[in-house]
Amino acid sequence: MTVENETAESTDPAVSPLAHFGAEVRLERERLDISRAELGKAACCSYSLVAKIEAGRRVPPLDFAEACDQMFPHSNGRFARLWPLALRWAFPPWFRRYVELEWTATAISMFHPQLVPGLVQTEEYARAVLRTGRPSNLEDLVTARMERQRVLAREVPTRLWIILDEGVLRRPIGGKHVMREQLKQLRALAETPRHVIQVIPKTIAAYPGSGSPFGLLSFSEGSDVVHVDGFPKGYVLADPDDVAAAYDAYDLLKATALPPDESASEIGSILKECYS
Image (cartoon, rainbow, N blue to C red; front, side):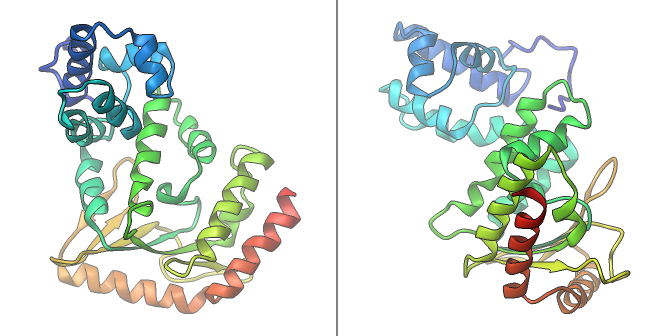
């Protein structure tokens, strides 16, 4: 994870929300004389993961925070309330604002010419993509990416519209097994009435915005924004002219891509052709 003060002692609760979360878990666990093994069993995780979370060296999944609230009778939901702050620390500072916006968005439209967007990646696909950067905190990054996907599991999930270049489906990230599971997940999303996935076929040589992944976020209150994915940093644009230009580009991408039903069939065909 990106930490603003990497020279500070990670076990100091004042260093970060992540360290504070871990210290609170340890204090409550020791006060109740609960072993790490017992907490790990309740949270369906290993002893070593409990130790790393307590030391502020691993990002806790929400399931872990909820297990703490169940194990510690007087927590009154404290760990579930602390969890968003701890999770936020797992993201680079420049990405944290976007994650906050993503969490409150009612609809997200995304275009990517190279990769499956993180919001719909399987865990193994995400691990294969993130591993290419050779990070020292790979599992934290994977956990954080998977936890973002809770917006799709809510009672009223965020609506998705995703446009992908066909090459994304054929690029063998992580090998056949990883791609098979990823395309199965994409096909399931494409067949869900609430969501739309469109594929730009390889026969289309050029199309609007082909060089830059971007997304549009809409909210129940407030103006839409654009997120441009880039290296080394992405950025969010809220200027109305930028948002309008992004919508114009996205409309052209919709017109260029295969219709939703044909796109779902195309995902199934590529799944059978390349990864069966």
